[in-house]
Length: 320
Picture 1 (cartoon, helix red, strand yellow):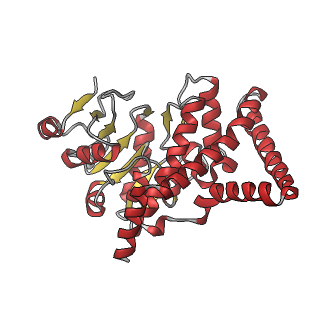
Picture 2 (tube, rainbow, N blue to C red):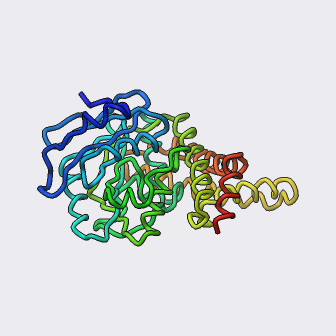
């Protein structure tokens, strides 16, 4: 059984464990609302589950009392192999490496819509550079920015984690964006290791849409913490939605441009279907990719309109 800790008993329950590397002590820190996790204790790993507040707060609690020099953050619905973890740990032999992450692929067995969800997340057309998070995008480790990593499976040097202040605790999702940006901004490398693969349980159809709406919302709140996080790419789905609606209202003849968008979606859906086992995924992909873009666009705009965003934006402006 994984250990479920409160902030009080964490201090007494977290002990040193057998290490994968003689110089590194490992514990998996998992934030879980239910107090449960897919990953269980192994002879090489101790799993610590914390269900206190939002995930950022829970992970910070785990980091505070962890005895490990390298913090290992894992989602409660994900699994990582020992070999994958060993691969990632080796990257910290470079003292300038502050964080290491990798792709999370669809956990099997999976339903039809869970597989479609995983394919959409991994698609360059649907997710742009963020698609690296959901597929083995390259063969060799590479230094990257925060868009290509997620807290689903993330290693962070503890002293660097403490230096940058850990995760923001008052919003979710998107808290790892701020953490990784601060690590990069502090002069440390963040590394994408294609061998550091996690198997991650996907949501179904509606769960995917809800999650992606949250990604857009969280991205905007992360931008409100530090404006340097913003990239024009993040606004592309929202801008595309505005252009489409404006054209439909005032220049109906330009709406034919949406046919080009639909052609791109169909071609990408066909490519993903052929590469991943069957044409049966084509209808689901053709439906979910545009809804993926729409959900992100609406979440991004909702984040921009929120009171929390406006308050943070003013604070950010006052500090600049």
